[in-house]
Length: 379
Image 1 (cartoon, rainbow, N blue to C red):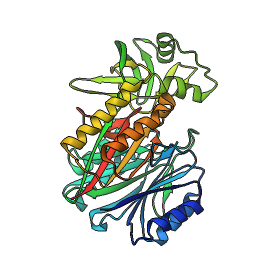
Image 2 (image 1 turned 135 degrees about the vertical axis):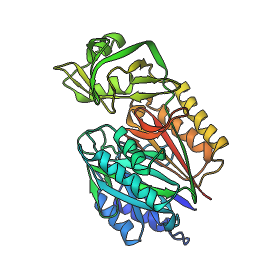
Image 3 (image 1 turned 60 degrees about the horizontal axis):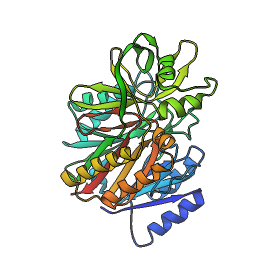
Image 4 (image 1 turned 90 degrees about the horizontal axis):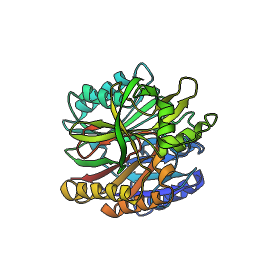
């Protein structure tokens, strides 16, 4: 399987880059498209549709095909994967139907291939991402490979969406279902964050809303414990200072912690609204702001995947949380570059609002503040 990555700041630049990539006879069947919400998505889809290329797409909060991070642009991975080895499925979802539609996705995967893998992207969901993984596994009838990310919208936090050739939706769920008997799909969800302080208990929560930690208002606990002064009239302050720098780590027995980002704060009831489910009774710890050790951990775990499962790759996809960019700053480019160097294969990625994948000691699940890397290799 051959893959090529292209990028552009406009429809015209992408049109030119696509033509150049196909000038040597390369005939892509699949395009993985990550673009800014500001770009003309319909025009991009029309260009690819005319070439008979299937589209898996998501809007972003930053995109990249190299260590150079772009904002407001279009990046694309073009693959000539055998059409018999994959299918794109698009579903409209919402608060009450996320689980059921994800189950439909898992059922369809089971019908298509005996050994399917799912690369997914979801729009702006008001339910937690665990329902997507849960639904896929229920529909399939057991644990199955699931990697992906939630779309972004340049941190506007208003309406990220996903799309395919003729469909798009803020409440969409799009998937590439891949036959793993024909194409290896290996990956890791890794973060490298270090916990700080003692373990605390979420004493009141509902879904993704945390009301109290150790019987104290969650927002007050975070502000006092971490010494953070937050202007609650500025939503992005909460994302930048709490979500990016001080995510919660949900501790579990015998598996790696799962990260939860505070996306918003409610100044009336002093609660935190997280990007994923935080069950009442959960044991949590706060996290230290990241340093180079966090990047080293991500690269180390990607290297283990290469050495143990996927020595070579035809293509590599990265779904990285926007909170990593906010907290890492210029170090983010170094993380991307070092991950690229693990496989030295065509590469594409974007900054997301949540990630789907399997940690080193966990199962396939929904993450925040995490870097999810997926390598594809035709057998």
